[in-house]
Structures are given as C-alpha cells and as structure tokens.
Image 1: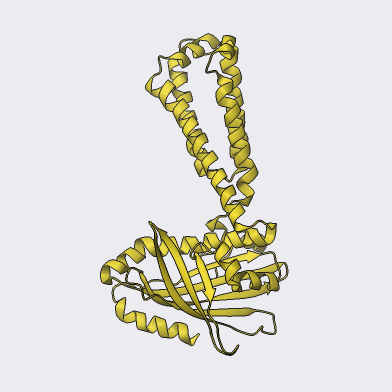
Image 2: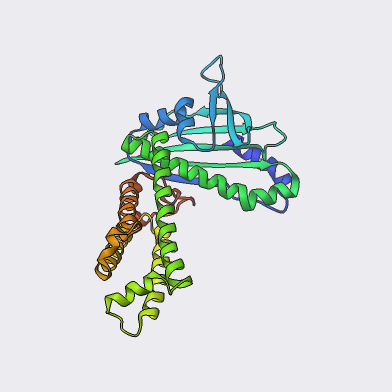
Amino acid sequence: MQMKRTIRDGSAINLVHYKPKPIYVETFIQTDMDSLWHHTQSPKLHQQWDLRFSEIHYLPRNSDDLPQLLHYKTRIGFGLHIEGTGETIASRPSRSGARTSALIFRSEQPISLIRSGSGYWQYTPEQAGIRFATEYDYTTRFGQLGRWFDRYVFRPMFGYATALSFDLLRLWLEKGLRPAAIIRTTAVHYVSIAMITMVWIWMGLVPKLLVPNGGDLKLMESLGLFAGAEEETLTLLGFIEVIFGVAAIGFHRVKYNWLLQIGMLTILTVAGLAADPSLLAAPFNPLLVSIPMFGLIAAVWLTMDVVPSASRCIRVRNQITPDEQQEGSK
C-alpha cells in the first residue's frame, strides 16, 4: 500500500540507529465475513474488544469514495488520555472474497509516543472461518530515548495488546461472550490463581521450611509412616507445596495440573485428619483450608476456556501454527 510505504520512508530519517519490525498479528476465527467485518468496522463494536482504544468515532464524510476520517482516544490512567485522528479506507471484496482495510493514524499530542503510523487489516476467507491479520508500523517522538522506550517497552506491550485483543474478538464471535463479560471472567480466573498460589507457597514455606518444629512436624510424627525421617520428609513436602504454588501460575491453562492439585490437596487433608482427628473441632482445621481451595480450583477450571490469550495468535508473518504442523506431518 502506497500510504504505508510513504510513512515508513519518512520514518527512516528518524530511526537511523533503530529500525523496528512492523507489528504483525494473525488469528483464525470461526465466523463469517459479514460478522467479522461488522465487529471490526463499526466503531461502537470495535472499541469494545480492542484494548488499544477507549473510544473510536467516525467523522462525517461527503462521499463514500473518500477515506473515512476518525477520532480515537486511549485512557492511560491518572485522568490522562492520548487522542489522535486517522483515515481508513476499505477495499472491495476480491473474487476469493478476501477484503482489506487500510489505515493512516497520527497524534498531535506532545505526550503521545506515537507521532504517526499506518497499517492494514486483512480478511481471508477459509473453509471453516476467516483468517484475520493486521500489520502496522509507526514513528515515535522524544528522539533516541523514545526509540529506546519503544523498542524495549512500548512496542512489545502494544503488540501483546493487539494479540490479546484479537483473541478477545475471537471469543466474542465464536462463543457469543461480550468482551466486558470476558474481562470480568478473566479477573476471576487470575484472582483465583493468585489466591491458590499464595496458599500453597505459605503452607510450604512457613510451617514446613521456615518453622519446621511447629504443628506440622507433630502431625508428621503422628502418622508413623516416616519413623526417623520426619524432618526430612517435612522439608521435601514443603518444597513440593511451593512447586505446586508456582505451577498454579505457570500451568494455569493445563487441566492435568488442576487434577494434580486436587489430588495433592485431598491427600494432605485426609492425612492431616487421619493423624489427628481432633483437628476437626479446632478453630482452624484442614477443612477450612481445603474447601475454599477446592472452590478456587473449580473457578479456575470453569473459566480457563474463556480467558483470552495472546499466545493463540501468530506474531510472525507466514508462521505455521502447531495445529498446521501436526496436519502437515500426517
């Protein structure tokens, strides 16, 4: 596209020492062209799923042959926002049904890192849905400092937000869940994970590794299964519980991880009560920990399939997905 090349040629003067790669994101959505086009070309719908923008408004135009002017705003916190303008134009469908929408954008605000940029959305119909891709690039303000910040902080963050937004759109179109509901579900998912992690690490670190001579050691001795090696076993158990806490974060999308967590939690609860049944009458007993933990694990399990993930998107042009690699090897 000519307008994209013009902006990139102009940016070459400013980016002498740093030539960034354009941001590229691609995903596959099981939907039809009309639905995807409507959700991406309607400002009221676009601003709901695209995390890069808070508000998008089309400006009046006199002819359909002219580019569509728009105004955008992004809240950055503390009552501040970045706003700018853009021009977008859509191509007519090709014989294959593919469509493209091109965009030029700019911001005159002195606090905006982005000075101007351009990009496109590409809609390619396939047998089971639409392959939706974007590529865009921009120039920055603030000289060498701005280029450094863009390279190491802003551009990776902006690319991640784009991919996360694409998956949010996919969930909306495939599962019929509105982005606001998905975001609330995502909050429940990650808060539950944080609580599970905190409990596991606390149970492993404090009573078993830092203060091993407390009640947990007495319970271990009461079991009578590790005669002479209770302290070593308690230390090992402490490390295992810390590992389970870390695994709750690192493998929160893996269902086998939560089955292991449920199994481990059940074993610890049964073993504790078997060692000292009187704990059931204590103000703080194993059931007061395990039952809420089971509830948190259930919350994670029930929400993991509707939590958006940037990793589901392709971030490099012509990259082959794992599913495509598997099909090619057959």
